Image 1 (cartoon, rainbow, N blue to C red):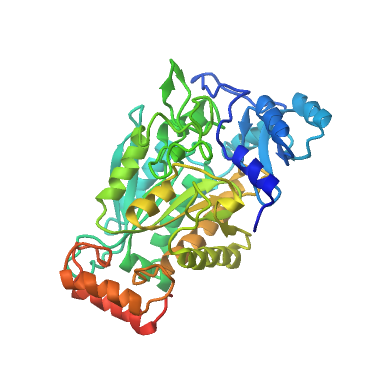
Image 2: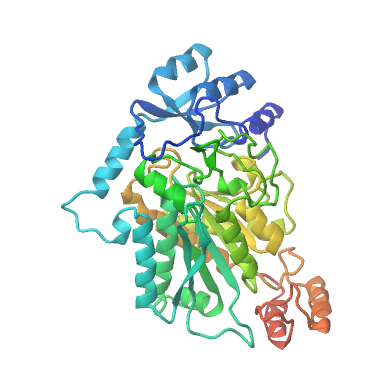
Amino acid sequence: MRKSHSVVLLAGLLACSAFGAAGDGAQAVGVPERFDNQRVVRVTPRSIADVNLLEQISGDRWTCGPGGANGEADYRIKASDLPLLNQAGVPYQIMIDNVQALIDAEQAEMNDPFRDRAFFDAYQNYTAVSDYVNTLAASYPTFVTRISLGNSLQGREIFGFRLTSPVPPIGGSPRKPVVFFNSLQHAREWIGVMVDMYIATQFLSQYQTNSTIKSLLDTYEFVFVPISNPDGYNITWTTSRLWRKNARVISGTVRGIDLNRNWSVGWGLNSGSSGTSTSDTYRGPSAFSEPETQALRNYALSVPKLVAAIDFHSYSQLVLRPWTYQYVLPQGIAGFDRIGNSMVNAIAASTGASYEYGGPDILYLASGTAPDWFYGTTGAVALTIELRDTGQNGFVLPVSQIIPSGNDGLAGAMALVTGLCRSDLNRDNIVDDSDFALFAASYDTFATNSADFTGDALTDDYDFMIFADAYEQFSCP
């Protein structure tokens, strides 16, 4: 869709850049925060004056705007400030009438002593998720290997696990091609943790009965990092349910850095992040200034062959492609479009949920994000999935939506990986003579390069067999 000039102008203003005027972004750790008589409103700013007013009265922008063609954005504001919007004539609708009521209901549902709960019947804290990973590794020792990527600012382990079948890699490859799934860069987006773990659980439980899952685990290795921001996650469980950033101390106070603005590709742009520490999108003093993003980056760079990645977030029900920091289309846009649309269709067929695929034109500019780095640095097909819902509950998604959201993520993830076309070397969405020429050049040198499909650091006969199969079909999946 194309925006009018005025909407494009507001898009730049709403692109999560310098927000933070009403609150100082600080977290008084240990002091429980409540959100009584606070609402979430969906606003359609008409001018710079409207944007300035919203940033003055809101303590928290829930979507960074523009959300769709109308330039909408969701803000958390006090009920007592609604008259200011009315007086200014700012168009809005109330999405959530009482934020604290949602949080109270979430806690009551999770703490109901009369319910016999399985893992996916409630949100799980850091310790419970870590224990569950250990359970998976103990229950499926030939499939699951726990890994440690490093430690957070406060010393918490950034853990994950490798998941693949015992079927060995092709040829002499040390590992199968890797698909990387991470979640919870933003601490309050609890549903991402559960979806990450749900996908892994379904892969394991359905391996013997689902031929597609069996093929995926026989072909690829999946790496799951469910809690990318363990310190921020701890804050949301102890003192502030709506905390977003990590726990970086700035000027003696925990203000935090937005980890998903701290990656190097596109880092530093005010159109998609902020250089102000009070902002919820504060990018930090330099790219990869934070140990959490360093840990994810270092692990990704240690992988012999990374082919795909999903960064799970909430909310809005979107599948987002690179580039997120600019409106320029990425190389290989046809392939992204094919895979992205297949993910949206797969989710709709599986759960009935309506997701939308696109780039920053359907959400907002965001600079210094993980998927842009994964794609720009490793060449992996990297996407963001914004999970449920579309604003009715926002970040405080009821536990009844955990499994439905998990099935959204499962369908989308399977569509992504089954749609990979590794032999499309020039990313034009077809395997033809131009790809053959690129492969032949790599095959002739027998060296490490983009035509190494197996991850053994060589372009050899095993890679030729993979390429030839796709070349004979003259098409991607």
